Image (cartoon, rainbow, N blue to C red; front, side, top):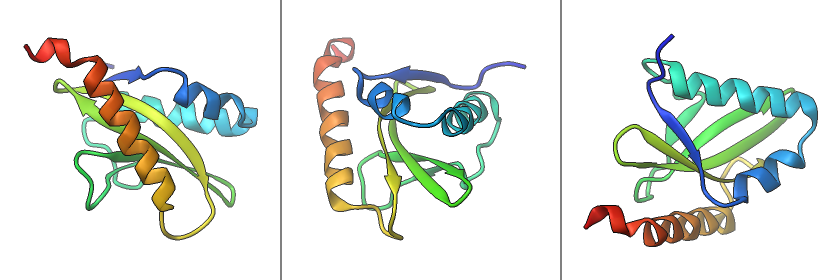
Length: 117
């Protein structure tokens, strides 16, 4: 099977979140990441653009009644950069999580701006 997208991680934001999860949740996250890497078309159930943001997406993971969101964004075509994740406990994504995701994306682009020159 041919990879459609490349997954990249920025600093330790994702690793800090991932390592705090149970093995079963980690397995579900891994499954979702593979789906995003290899699927021709990713179902919105697993990967969705966040309305009202400038290029932020959320990877959507559910394990039992627990819901997790992992923020990410695109860099140069088919590269998806994963930022941080959190466990979702309300219907609406908390504003502080969105603000953190925007700051991480901004920091990534600032640190990687040299390829734009």
